Image (cartoon, rainbow, N blue to C red):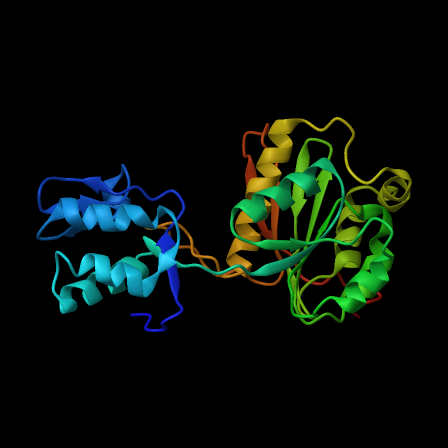
Amino acid sequence: MCNQSDTVIALAMGVQVLSRGPHALQFGLDATRSGIIEVGDARAVAAALDSLSTPRPLTEVVRRLAVSMDADGVRSLIQDLIAYRVLVEVARPAVLLIGTSTLANTLAETLRTSGIHVRSPDPTQPLSRFLFDAPSPLPLIIVDQAHRTRALAAYTRHRTGPVIPVLQIDARVLVGPYAVGVEGPCLICREHYLLERDPQWAAIAAAAPAGVRNPDPVVVQAGVAAAATLVRRICQLPDPPGVSAPDPRTGDTLLVDPFNRTPLKTLRLQPHPDCPLCF
Protein backbone atom coordinates (compact mmCIF):
# COMPACT_ATOMS: atom_id res chain seq x y z
CA MET A 1 0.00 0.00 0.00
CA CYS A 2 1.14 3.56 -0.62
CA ASN A 3 2.70 4.70 2.64
CA GLN A 4 3.78 8.25 1.90
CA SER A 5 2.18 10.68 4.30
CA ASP A 6 1.56 13.11 1.45
CA THR A 7 -0.13 10.59 -0.88
CA VAL A 8 -3.55 11.72 -2.10
CA ILE A 9 -6.06 9.21 -3.50
CA ALA A 10 -9.50 9.38 -5.08
CA LEU A 11 -12.15 7.21 -6.67
CA ALA A 12 -11.31 6.62 -10.30
CA MET A 13 -13.45 8.51 -12.80
CA GLY A 14 -16.66 6.64 -13.58
CA VAL A 15 -16.57 4.54 -10.40
CA GLN A 16 -19.72 4.30 -8.28
CA VAL A 17 -19.90 2.70 -4.84
CA LEU A 18 -23.04 0.54 -4.86
CA SER A 19 -24.40 -1.75 -2.16
CA ARG A 20 -25.07 -5.45 -2.82
CA GLY A 21 -26.46 -5.94 0.66
CA PRO A 22 -25.23 -5.39 4.23
CA HIS A 23 -21.83 -7.03 3.62
CA ALA A 24 -20.87 -6.41 -0.01
CA LEU A 25 -20.11 -3.49 -2.32
CA GLN A 26 -19.55 -3.20 -6.04
CA PHE A 27 -17.99 -0.31 -7.95
CA GLY A 28 -20.17 0.13 -11.02
CA LEU A 29 -23.33 -1.18 -12.61
CA ASP A 30 -21.58 -4.12 -14.29
CA ALA A 31 -20.44 -6.36 -11.46
CA THR A 32 -18.57 -8.66 -13.87
CA ARG A 33 -16.18 -5.85 -14.68
CA SER A 34 -16.32 -3.27 -11.90
CA GLY A 35 -15.37 -5.55 -9.01
CA ILE A 36 -17.07 -6.71 -5.80
CA ILE A 37 -15.74 -6.72 -2.22
CA GLU A 38 -17.08 -8.28 0.96
CA VAL A 39 -16.88 -6.19 4.13
CA GLY A 40 -18.24 -6.35 7.64
CA ASP A 41 -20.21 -3.11 7.46
CA ALA A 42 -21.02 -2.15 3.88
CA ARG A 43 -22.74 1.09 4.85
CA ALA A 44 -19.77 2.45 6.83
CA VAL A 45 -17.20 1.42 4.22
CA ALA A 46 -19.34 2.86 1.42
CA ALA A 47 -19.55 6.19 3.24
CA ALA A 48 -15.76 6.33 3.61
CA LEU A 49 -15.16 5.42 -0.02
CA ASP A 50 -17.89 7.71 -1.33
CA SER A 51 -16.05 10.62 0.26
CA LEU A 52 -13.24 9.96 -2.22
CA SER A 53 -15.19 11.50 -5.06
CA THR A 54 -13.10 14.42 -3.79
CA PRO A 55 -9.37 13.60 -3.52
CA ARG A 56 -8.23 13.09 0.07
CA PRO A 57 -4.97 12.27 1.85
CA LEU A 58 -4.38 8.55 2.25
CA THR A 59 -3.89 8.99 5.99
CA GLU A 60 -7.38 10.48 6.31
CA VAL A 61 -8.93 7.59 4.37
CA VAL A 62 -7.16 5.06 6.60
CA ARG A 63 -8.54 6.78 9.69
CA ARG A 64 -12.10 6.80 8.35
CA LEU A 65 -12.00 3.12 7.38
CA ALA A 66 -10.43 2.15 10.71
CA VAL A 67 -13.68 3.09 12.45
CA SER A 68 -15.33 -0.05 11.03
CA MET A 69 -12.33 -2.27 10.14
CA ASP A 70 -9.14 -3.48 11.77
CA ALA A 71 -5.74 -2.23 10.56
CA ASP A 72 -4.98 -5.33 8.48
CA GLY A 73 -8.40 -5.14 6.85
CA VAL A 74 -7.93 -1.47 5.97
CA ARG A 75 -4.49 -2.14 4.50
CA SER A 76 -5.73 -5.09 2.45
CA LEU A 77 -8.80 -3.21 1.20
CA ILE A 78 -6.85 -0.18 0.02
CA GLN A 79 -4.21 -2.37 -1.63
CA ASP A 80 -6.90 -4.32 -3.49
CA LEU A 81 -8.81 -1.23 -4.62
CA ILE A 82 -5.66 0.47 -5.89
CA ALA A 83 -4.55 -2.70 -7.69
CA TYR A 84 -7.94 -2.93 -9.39
CA ARG A 85 -7.87 0.81 -10.20
CA VAL A 86 -11.03 1.57 -8.23
CA LEU A 87 -8.86 3.94 -6.20
CA VAL A 88 -6.12 5.93 -7.92
CA GLU A 89 -3.25 8.07 -6.73
CA VAL A 90 -3.92 11.65 -7.69
CA ALA A 91 -1.31 12.91 -10.14
CA ARG A 92 -1.25 15.76 -12.64
CA PRO A 93 1.08 14.90 -15.53
CA ALA A 94 1.84 17.56 -18.11
CA VAL A 95 1.79 17.51 -21.91
CA LEU A 96 2.55 20.02 -24.64
CA LEU A 97 -0.13 20.66 -27.25
CA ILE A 98 0.27 22.59 -30.50
CA GLY A 99 -2.82 23.58 -32.46
CA THR A 100 -5.76 25.97 -32.36
CA SER A 101 -8.40 24.12 -34.40
CA THR A 102 -11.70 22.89 -32.99
CA LEU A 103 -10.18 19.43 -32.70
CA ALA A 104 -7.16 20.81 -30.84
CA ASN A 105 -9.22 22.89 -28.42
CA THR A 106 -11.65 20.05 -27.69
CA LEU A 107 -8.79 17.62 -27.11
CA ALA A 108 -7.06 20.08 -24.78
CA GLU A 109 -10.22 20.49 -22.71
CA THR A 110 -10.77 16.72 -22.52
CA LEU A 111 -7.21 16.18 -21.32
CA ARG A 112 -7.59 18.88 -18.68
CA THR A 113 -10.75 17.29 -17.31
CA SER A 114 -8.86 13.98 -17.26
CA GLY A 115 -6.36 15.52 -14.84
CA ILE A 116 -3.60 16.42 -17.31
CA HIS A 117 -1.91 19.83 -17.35
CA VAL A 118 -1.89 21.06 -20.96
CA ARG A 119 0.75 23.59 -22.00
CA SER A 120 0.42 25.41 -25.34
CA PRO A 121 2.41 28.24 -26.92
CA ASP A 122 1.26 31.81 -26.52
CA PRO A 123 -0.26 33.24 -29.73
CA THR A 124 2.82 35.41 -30.35
CA GLN A 125 5.40 32.82 -29.28
CA PRO A 126 7.39 31.16 -32.09
CA LEU A 127 6.99 27.39 -32.10
CA SER A 128 10.74 26.94 -32.20
CA ARG A 129 11.10 28.93 -28.96
CA PHE A 130 8.18 27.11 -27.29
CA LEU A 131 9.68 23.71 -28.08
CA PHE A 132 13.20 24.79 -27.17
CA ASP A 133 12.07 26.07 -23.77
CA ALA A 134 9.78 23.11 -22.95
CA PRO A 135 11.24 20.07 -21.18
CA SER A 136 12.24 17.53 -23.81
CA PRO A 137 10.73 14.47 -22.04
CA LEU A 138 7.19 15.90 -21.96
CA PRO A 139 4.74 14.28 -24.40
CA LEU A 140 4.06 16.54 -27.39
CA ILE A 141 0.70 16.48 -29.18
CA ILE A 142 0.58 18.16 -32.60
CA VAL A 143 -2.95 18.79 -33.88
CA ASP A 144 -3.93 19.84 -37.41
CA GLN A 145 -0.49 21.08 -38.43
CA ALA A 146 -0.07 19.32 -41.78
CA HIS A 147 0.69 22.68 -43.42
CA ARG A 148 4.01 22.86 -41.55
CA THR A 149 5.00 19.22 -41.40
CA ARG A 150 8.62 19.75 -42.43
CA ALA A 151 9.39 22.49 -39.92
CA LEU A 152 7.77 20.63 -37.04
CA ALA A 153 9.53 17.41 -37.96
CA ALA A 154 12.87 19.21 -37.73
CA TYR A 155 11.94 20.80 -34.39
CA THR A 156 10.66 17.59 -32.81
CA ARG A 157 12.69 14.70 -34.18
CA HIS A 158 15.37 14.92 -31.51
CA ARG A 159 13.07 15.40 -28.55
CA THR A 160 13.38 12.60 -26.03
CA GLY A 161 9.69 12.38 -25.14
CA PRO A 162 6.67 10.98 -26.98
CA VAL A 163 5.26 12.74 -30.04
CA ILE A 164 1.62 12.17 -31.01
CA PRO A 165 0.39 13.86 -34.20
CA VAL A 166 -3.36 14.21 -34.66
CA LEU A 167 -4.88 15.31 -37.96
CA GLN A 168 -8.47 15.73 -39.08
CA ILE A 169 -8.87 14.84 -42.74
CA ASP A 170 -12.42 15.77 -43.75
CA ALA A 171 -14.69 13.32 -41.88
CA ARG A 172 -11.84 11.21 -40.48
CA VAL A 173 -9.14 11.74 -37.88
CA LEU A 174 -5.66 10.23 -38.05
CA VAL A 175 -4.03 9.75 -34.64
CA GLY A 176 -0.33 8.93 -34.89
CA PRO A 177 2.02 7.48 -35.80
CA TYR A 178 3.26 7.49 -32.22
CA ALA A 179 6.97 8.10 -31.81
CA VAL A 180 9.38 8.42 -28.88
CA GLY A 181 12.58 10.30 -29.55
CA VAL A 182 14.09 8.93 -32.74
CA GLU A 183 12.15 5.67 -32.42
CA GLY A 184 9.12 5.32 -34.65
CA PRO A 185 7.90 7.20 -37.72
CA CYS A 186 8.25 10.99 -37.76
CA LEU A 187 5.91 13.63 -39.20
CA ILE A 188 7.58 13.42 -42.60
CA CYS A 189 6.99 9.66 -42.59
CA ARG A 190 3.29 10.36 -42.10
CA GLU A 191 3.39 12.78 -45.01
CA HIS A 192 4.98 10.15 -47.24
CA TYR A 193 2.31 7.60 -46.35
CA LEU A 194 -0.34 10.17 -47.28
CA LEU A 195 1.52 10.99 -50.51
CA GLU A 196 1.20 7.34 -51.49
CA ARG A 197 -2.57 7.84 -51.50
CA ASP A 198 -2.48 11.24 -53.21
CA PRO A 199 0.67 12.59 -54.91
CA GLN A 200 -0.67 16.13 -54.44
CA TRP A 201 -1.20 15.73 -50.70
CA ALA A 202 1.70 17.95 -49.59
CA ALA A 203 0.69 20.81 -51.87
CA ILE A 204 -2.96 20.63 -50.83
CA ALA A 205 -2.08 20.40 -47.12
CA ALA A 206 0.33 23.34 -47.34
CA ALA A 207 -2.38 25.56 -48.83
CA ALA A 208 -5.19 24.41 -46.53
CA PRO A 209 -5.97 26.12 -43.22
CA ALA A 210 -5.01 24.54 -39.91
CA GLY A 211 -8.12 22.52 -39.16
CA VAL A 212 -11.35 21.73 -40.95
CA ARG A 213 -13.78 24.61 -41.26
CA ASN A 214 -17.15 23.91 -39.67
CA PRO A 215 -16.11 20.41 -38.55
CA ASP A 216 -18.73 17.77 -37.87
CA PRO A 217 -19.00 17.46 -34.07
CA VAL A 218 -19.32 13.68 -34.31
CA VAL A 219 -15.97 13.48 -36.08
CA VAL A 220 -14.35 15.84 -33.59
CA GLN A 221 -15.65 13.91 -30.58
CA ALA A 222 -14.65 10.55 -32.04
CA GLY A 223 -11.17 11.82 -32.83
CA VAL A 224 -10.78 13.35 -29.39
CA ALA A 225 -11.84 10.10 -27.69
CA ALA A 226 -9.22 8.10 -29.58
CA ALA A 227 -6.45 10.66 -29.15
CA ALA A 228 -7.19 11.32 -25.47
CA THR A 229 -7.17 7.60 -24.67
CA LEU A 230 -3.72 7.25 -26.25
CA VAL A 231 -2.40 10.33 -24.46
CA ARG A 232 -3.75 9.19 -21.10
CA ARG A 233 -2.01 5.83 -21.46
CA ILE A 234 1.23 7.52 -22.48
CA CYS A 235 0.93 9.69 -19.35
CA GLN A 236 0.38 6.47 -17.35
CA LEU A 237 -3.03 7.50 -16.10
CA PRO A 238 -4.84 4.29 -15.15
CA ASP A 239 -7.52 2.78 -17.33
CA PRO A 240 -10.93 2.12 -15.72
CA PRO A 241 -11.36 -0.96 -13.52
CA GLY A 242 -11.63 -4.20 -15.45
CA VAL A 243 -9.88 -2.89 -18.57
CA SER A 244 -6.70 -4.53 -19.80
CA ALA A 245 -4.92 -2.91 -22.76
CA PRO A 246 -1.33 -3.17 -23.98
CA ASP A 247 1.02 -0.23 -23.62
CA PRO A 248 1.29 2.00 -26.72
CA ARG A 249 4.05 1.03 -29.14
CA THR A 250 6.02 3.26 -31.46
CA GLY A 251 4.31 3.34 -34.84
CA ASP A 252 0.83 2.84 -33.39
CA THR A 253 -1.68 4.72 -35.54
CA LEU A 254 -5.45 5.04 -35.25
CA LEU A 255 -7.72 5.85 -38.17
CA VAL A 256 -10.96 7.23 -36.74
CA ASP A 257 -13.80 7.11 -39.26
CA PRO A 258 -17.06 7.34 -37.28
CA PHE A 259 -19.44 7.18 -40.24
CA ASN A 260 -17.78 4.15 -41.78
CA ARG A 261 -18.80 0.53 -41.26
CA THR A 262 -15.54 0.14 -39.32
CA PRO A 263 -15.33 3.31 -37.21
CA LEU A 264 -11.85 2.64 -35.82
CA LYS A 265 -8.86 0.94 -37.41
CA THR A 266 -5.57 0.27 -35.64
CA LEU A 267 -2.38 0.28 -37.71
CA ARG A 268 1.30 0.02 -36.90
CA LEU A 269 3.47 2.04 -39.25
CA GLN A 270 7.22 1.80 -39.69
CA PRO A 271 9.51 4.71 -40.59
CA HIS A 272 8.91 5.40 -44.28
CA PRO A 273 11.85 4.29 -46.47
CA ASP A 274 11.72 7.58 -48.42
CA CYS A 275 11.90 9.78 -45.32
CA PRO A 276 15.00 12.01 -45.46
CA LEU A 277 14.90 12.54 -41.69
CA CYS A 278 14.78 8.88 -40.64
CA PHE A 279 17.13 7.44 -43.27
